[in-house]
Image (cartoon, rainbow over all chains, first blue to last red; front, side, top):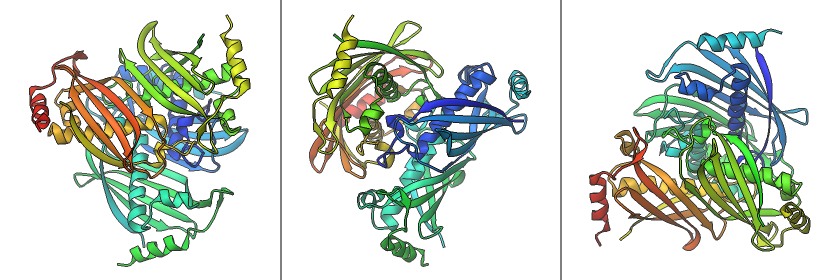
Length: 137
Length: 137
Length: 137
Length: 137
């Protein structure tokens, strides 16, 4: 069962381009911010702290569908929904809403690696347990 | 039939993150640069010039699969392959190679719009013709 | 008299580079975020809303001194202090603190322009008044 | 005596913001690209290769003055001029020209550090020698 949360943010000047809407690659920053928030809420630990303890997550897949443009200053809700694909991979799915209307969908698949070998490794047991607790209704 | 070109670039400091590899979202900058190059070569016109003449392309879909990491200073070849999906949409597919080895695959779908209405419109005929010329073997 | 506020944020993955510290240009994103926050608090209006009403601020000068590096996940306080240089220019000065210690200093000078002519123009009176109210001890 | 070179580039979509000109922080990417080019030409070695050999340069100061805006697709010349401030620091000064006209000035001061201690250290002798060769008229 996926675990879902909502992260709120807004479209900044540096997110926009000459078309006066958010640049397509800026959305990946929204997704990264939502995962940072998710990690603190669900894993009880920041991705940053995890990084320093030797658990790195690397992105192996990313994607986005842009249904409606976002403009400077738009207040947006990034709904992030995570599921464990295996003992070493997490899939994050995103829906961005503006005034309740779906504007963008995206995903990121991340694999846990050991930075000393750069090989896939099992997600730490404590993270898995916290994830399973959050899954409970 | 798709039209293909290769754009060469390298991984810069600002493309990297604390994992000491190219950040997953930096690849979209490589793709954008490859399209800029493609546009000048095939359409005989820069996307920029087109933009000022009132033809805007907006990204409606983006995605990447990261097979192998890229590091600071890596010399890479971005193979870009384009096809007309309809009279108003272009799909660009990318393969990034390093020393001949595939490291990353990606795509961008762009739709031609009229900036005054922000609605999809036909790709200018001159662009379609140049594309068809480039398709010929 | 300058008007000062503090904006809190943290160093994200995309702020870092291969040196495993915040990339020098990422600090300008911290400054932009601090100004966005300042604008809402002091001008009672977002820069974004102002932009749509036809008041644009363009950056004419920027600078930073980096005393100590920032790392992934660092919680930072961006102290922003603004002063009116003239009827058309604002100077924002920044001090970034981490655990109470000064790590970075910076500044941005912005000039109010009329987007239709791209010429400097007076800052709207309502903004000046709100600024002067905020100046009062 | 400073050593000078010119690096040519153009303003990309991701460099622009909603004001339809290059975003002020994008210029630091132009400067970084110019230094990458300078390093290969003058030091006969990329900053990247140097990085992997254990010589890191960290930015301790950055700044820009924006005299005229740059727009999407503008072809620009980044004149970079470097001087050794001491045995451990280099100052890069930049002038950006468009059609022969000065649009922007900037600088970056970089200090050579030992990444294992994060302390300032002497610039490798081979780099200093190549710099001095380039200084000769």
